[in-house]
Length: 267
Image 1: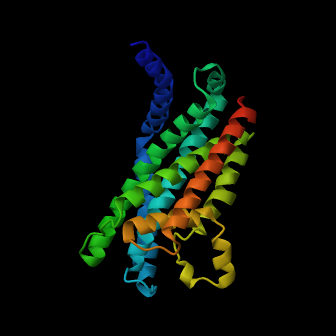
Image 2: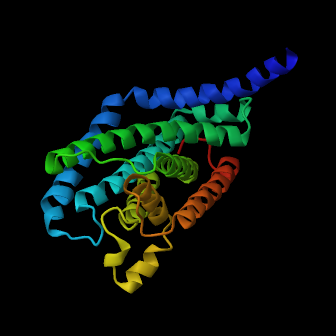
Image 3: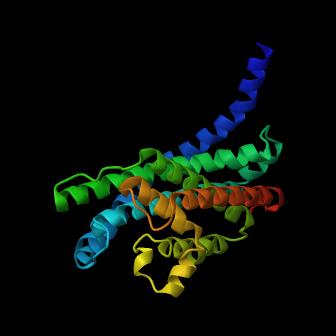
C-alpha cells in the first residue's frame, strides 16, 4: 500500500501539469480548431486542386494525395511548437513560471509534461487537417484516402510532436522578448518546414537542393508520415525513424539545458 501511494504521489504532479497544458489550449478551442481548418483548406485548394492538376509525379498518387501527409505533419509540428512556447512565455510574463522551481516535479517531468500538452494539441490539429484533406480527396476522386501503415503514421506524428514541443519550450526559456520568440518561428521553423518536403518530392529537386534538404530533420519526419499514409517515401523508413528519434533526443537535451539555465522571470 505504501509503494502504491508513493507511485501515485510521484505521477500526480506530472499528470496535473499535463492537464493544465491541455486545459490551456481548450480555452481557445475555436482558434485551435478553426485556424487549421482555414489554413489546410487554403493549402489544399490552391496547391492540391488548382496547381496540382498541372503537377505530375512519378508515383501512382495524385499531387493532392502527396500533399495531404505533408500538411498533416506541418500542422502537428507548428501547433506543438506554438502551444509549448506560448505556455512558457505566458507563464513567464505572469510570474507563474517561477513556481516550477518549488514544485515536486523533476526537470525531465516538467519537460515531458509540457511536451505532452503540446503533442495533444498537435494531434488534434493533425486529425482535423487529415479530415479536411479526406473531404477534398473524395470530392476530387470520389474515393477516400486510405492509411497504409497506421502504426508508422502514429510513430512519426507522436515523435515529431514531442520533439517540436520541446523545441518550443527551449525557445521560450531562451527568449527575452516577444520579438525573439516570434523571430524563431518566422526565420527558423517555417523555412525548415517548407523546405522539408511538404510541397515537393526530392526526385524533382536539383542535386544541390536535394543534398541540402537531406540535412533537414523535418524531411525525415514528413516523409515518415507520408510513408504511413501512402506507403511510399523519398527516404528509407529506417533512416527516417533513426533521424526522428535522434531529433527527439537532441531536443530533449536542449530543453533540459534551457530549463536549467534559461530565464524564469518576466522579460
